[in-house]
Length: 158
Image 1 (tube, rainbow, N blue to C red):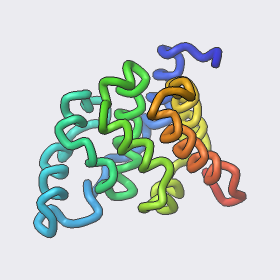
Image 2 (image 1 turned 180 degrees about the vertical axis):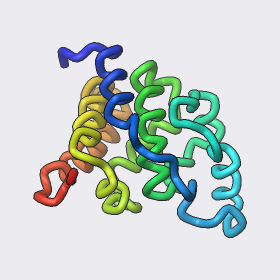
Image 3 (image 1 turned 45 degrees about the horizontal axis):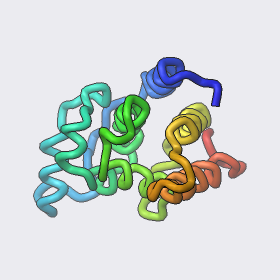
């Protein structure tokens, strides 16, 4: 792919710059589930640009618990960390890839993403997909299929 990492990072920032902060961080209320409570405490009041590898590694499954609006809001932070160095995400990268592949909350999450956001997600995935011999390769394939499936629907990205 011809896009350099700094240009792709700029596209991520530009595409998600006007996304409002979420009213709710997780799908469940923080008091209903201890995991949701920990994730809410970790992300409450944070801007997506404040995500760090250490923060997301502290709760590697957090993305699976996020509400649809929190998923859209924090997605650029995950993408930027992955662009900088996908190994910084370690096991949280698998969580991100699974969230993009679905099926949990995929429809609701993807409906919130605009076409330019879906395209930049796809471009980031393309840029960081490892060689086929890498054990993570098929996670990337599934994530790209999930994004592409939604991107090519007539009602997608409105």
